[in-house]
Image (cartoon, rainbow, N blue to C red):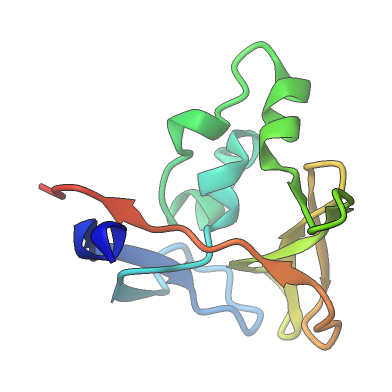
Length: 130
């Protein structure tokens, strides 16, 4: 309960998907928990306007000169210690039914939304947002 009281809402932008590639066509929501966007986890996609419009890469996930270390930070494991794929909120441009996810190796991959057997890793913000 102590942590719950420290969580503050933040504004998140998400591409509207559906094959739309306009970086201005974004849904904007205020959330206390959310799925991260592709750009928030992987900075190598920053040169694509549609991805960059969803936000910026969190410092923890920036690769800098060590791409492999950044991939390892994105890997999430199940209770048995096995790396698992997990969904993120970014739709794939040019597609009406694909989304991005993070693979067992920590890279971004796209797949059909109907493959619902993957996990999620929520984000939240603790502290004061200015």
